[in-house]
Image (tube, rainbow, N blue to C red; front, side, top):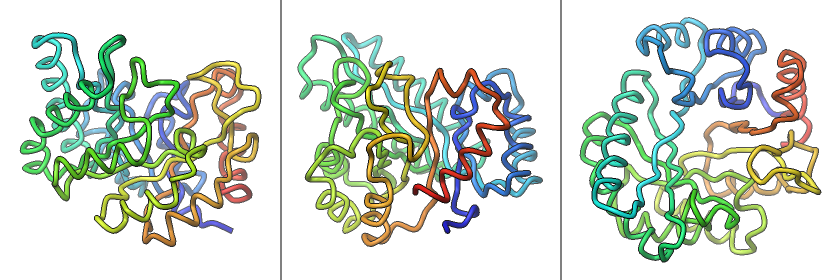
Length: 272
């Protein structure tokens, strides 16, 4: 049975709860880590949130999210850089060692151009991230999001971007929802590990049929993803970080969140 000390829950997973409630509930359940989404910090004193998490022995695994670097004009490119610089400041204030990057894309713009803008954007904010001790994790997204959410759709593309950037502060967040279908995944996990790029591991499940391309993720064990197999590949490659539950689900958000959190803990131990 997987230890709860290695379980991390994203605040977006229990979106109806404000962060003060989430931290109480996660700690009471024995969960070891938390990934904080930026909207959960809106209107909050980040130092106060950090102190609250520390007092509950919740390890801050990462801040979500940065990215969305591509844009159709110079003004948009600069706005993205400015927002990512703010995210780095927020991560540093929160004590988060890493920011997860949903890298972005521009509908109608060639994907290669968007990938170039992603690399340029990361390089632009990298000095500030390094100065703050914050790592940047590129998260490849499922190809169904290649139009406007991420021009980086595969582990191979994420590894290629990391290679171009060439910094130990830039790596990859592996989310099973986005990469489970890729037959090159095991080799690309090993390649990332060889360069110390395996920064994060996110879990949920793929519903069949899915009713919403964004907000119909399943609880682990509800869908068709071989989560234990991917976790084993990660661990055999040397990854020893948290198993982060990240579920966007209108179905689960509409239900009792205490019962949902209990189901998360059970599903993590039974199906991860």
